[in-house]
Length: 276
Ligand SMILES: *[C@@H]1O[C@H](CO)[C@@H](O)[C@H](O)[C@H]1NC(C)=O
Ligand SMILES: *[C@@H]1O[C@H](CO)[C@@H](O)[C@H](O)[C@H]1NC(C)=O
Image (cartoon, rainbow, N blue to C red):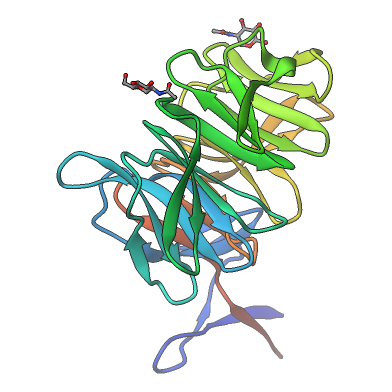
């Protein structure tokens, strides 16, 4: 019995006998995906983050005048817009519960109202915000000290769990903080200083990403890896030529930057037909 795959999207339906492994796009967990170009001709899009309710992707890129800005791209309608009113927007964080959006800049913290398209300054005046994450409260790290702070009710406080260490990027999930610095990838139970080091590449790290099911991923320059907490390792699930940031959309599809384009990986729909 031969397996015939009818590829959808063709004008005349072509039936081709192909091997199971054949994939023109990118394989994700053994499933063939095509690369949907969401937006192109961007300068260094990075720091990707999708609000799972609105399916809006927030990211940083560089404008023609060499300033950084945070922009938004609606992944359903492809509507694209730079966010105004923030000097040098560099990082952002989305609260997965309230869907509030926060922006970090070279001059403190902003809250962004996606409906009114309005950014409002909220605090940390003069601080250069390096990376951010929202989990119950807003966490941010400062450049160049790379120390982590929390911001709550207008007040910034040094985050005690990480007061002794340098942190480049971090993510908080399931009672653990995952972070990366110049020495490696670590996790640490919240409320402790019990740091564990992962057996993982860390040169070429470009960002953390939490999928819709709550699995922690790391985006590296050469692909996407899933973090395996039990074995303190990471496993490559997507092999790509160049990655400068990644996130997951509301349907748990990977969205990534290749340095100039924003791309989404969509499973190729195939129809299996049995031939007698
Ligand atoms: C921010 O910097 C300006 C200029 O150096 C200074 O006048 C101001 O007091 C600073 N504000 C805060 C809140 O640190
Ligand atoms: C990275 O974090 C670990 C764990 O806290 C720490 O031991 C190490 O010194 C840090 N590396 C740098 C370069 O600060």
